[in-house]
Amino acid sequence: MIANHTTVWIVIVALAIGSFLIRFSFLGIVGDRPMPEWLLRHLRYTPVAVLPGLVAPLVLWPSATGGMTDPARLAAALMTLSVGYFSRNVLAAILSGAATLYGLLYMLG
Image (tube, rainbow, N blue to C red; front, side):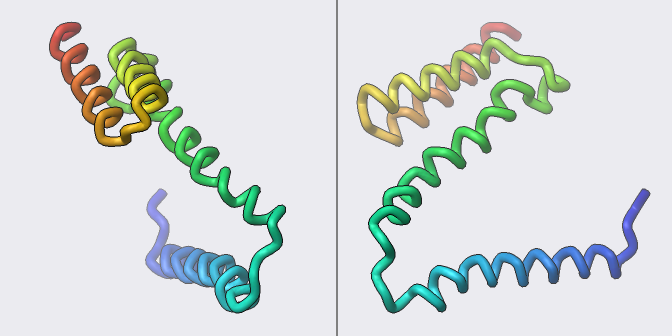
């Protein structure tokens, strides 16, 4: 069922207000004071937790294969992870993962 325009705009406005309030809680209320060390320590791990959560479904259940796990995508993810871990170079990790993905997709058909 297609939602009507009013419902879509209500959702957009609600998400905008929620996003503003989340940002304002850090920038507007606490922005002029230093944050506690325990909070800063926990915030440092946010990207490390969010990025795998965004990438894992795309690797394990890609829509390009109808949700079936693909060995090319698994190998590309493992190559990206290992090159990034050992070289500490983001660009090398991205390029090696892309080369692995496209190479295996070409070879496996």
